[in-house]
Image (cartoon, rainbow, N blue to C red; front, side, top):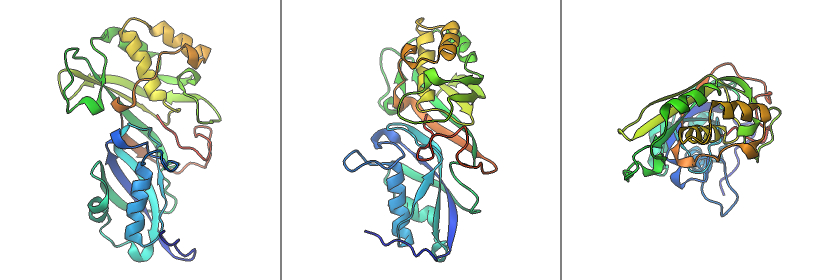
Length: 278
């Protein structure tokens, strides 16, 4: 076991931007023994090996098992004597191949990966070709077949703005309020002709809220839900009446915007012991 750093040791806070393929991770958060490896545990192990003592990493978003990230952000306090290490190169030399650190920057001690975030963007990729799925794309898409794009667009408009999203939150995380704001929700072509990528942006999301929204949009595309369905679900606040949750592999954390640190906890945060997850 690595030694704990001395409480009097001066530290430097690092902002760490990383990407990962979530397929073989049990999510961001450290899991109980035997329940799979986590992104947080792998990052902390690498940081601790380089720092010579245990280092805790705090993440901006607790992504679920199977969810990917192009720009997850964490912060960690490392001993000042080790601050000059080539952290980017050193971390990438020892992290597993399904993780990569994109940037390491010293920041003020006021920066907090979770509480300084003001906006998050997620993408969700749908695969519309019914005859096959490219093997290279299988870990990153949800195969749904042909859908009515106009119906999905109409349903998507109902999610914009501030609403009570209780019907789009899965159980498992206590929150002070289920009211959230969606700033944008749009669709664009993907990497291949068979793909369409939906992108959603907002200050924060409830547990599996983005995947539940996508499940509802796909239902609209299949003709089993409508824009009126979305309005009814938002007003009724009953998760049991909503379509099924979209699978994890189509979801990717794309970007996080940071601003002035919020006081924790705020009404937009989960329980202090939890992280937001989409």
